[in-house]
Image (cartoon, rainbow, N blue to C red):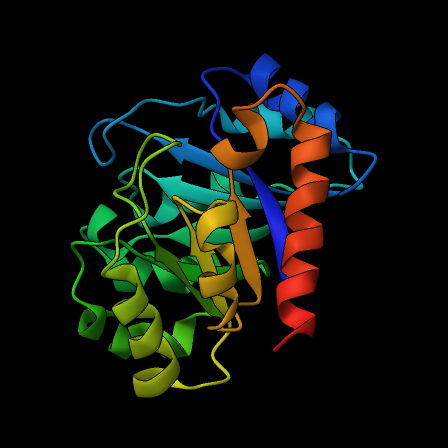
Length: 217
């Protein structure tokens, strides 16, 4: 179970700054890419900038924007480890997922709060994991939606208890223990790390809390 820092940035300089703040502790980051035609915010989204990132990084690319299948190829840069896509962001979700698989990256599906979980069942053969979003797609710092726990239960019971799972959005010290009970492979955290004065300290404290809660189970 890993905690991955999430970067929600207006420009590429901010992306680099947030990576540099934690690079002595981790090489893994979760990069949000959002447009207002899908999410309720705009972030950095120039795929050519990805070539400028250090090769040793492992980036989750969470694409919260509308995509045609062929557009996924532009985002598939060497530094990207996982592509996280949303069914409702494409008119051709099957084609998008099939083409994403050809990139040889891990392909994950994002389950937004308004997406009926059953809709992703027929696409499971195309994906490596499911991201359950605890907030509406968009800005960091939103409050965790309580119904997310039901969705996590659904993944573990209706899909497969061993299904690879990522939880993202609204996670902080106060609900981290409850999240760990679902044994996600990855816990994605943005504002609880970066919206404070010392991201390095915040990240370390969250790692220690996660280790403590896992060891007590």
